[in-house]
Image (cartoon, rainbow, N blue to C red):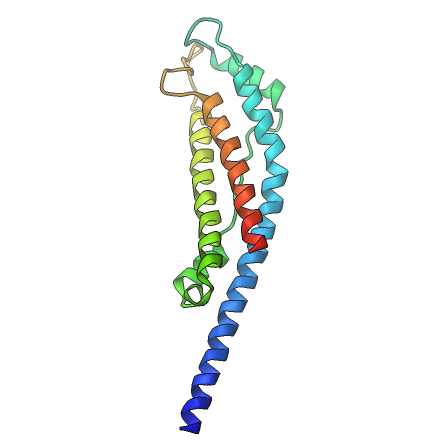
Length: 172
């Protein structure tokens, strides 16, 4: 009986250490991601304002050259998406370590990483709208289903939510 008790105690210590190590790695990853997010936010707000300020000369019409000049003047560095990491989270998720982290902490972390995925999708939408192949002189880049201003506003909104989720995860 004593040997069984010692084995259970050792297993509990290993499980606790594995959960603690995973939590330390995840929090370090969130700190790094948060730093990158905070650095990118002013740029993305400027991009949003630049897109919002680009007005076609005719409804739905703006040449590629005009767009390029207006956007380059407003944002000479182009569009730099936030690329948060999720390696520690995925590693903990694929092992049993995440299951051993307290439920409310795990839920707070999961919310932050889900918001990070949503932000990545928003950034991809902006990038896909910006990715132009060689085009004719006049290109209708303001089609009814594409709004660079709205897409970049969505990025700005998602970044604000992600920052709050990161802060909540770090305080938990």
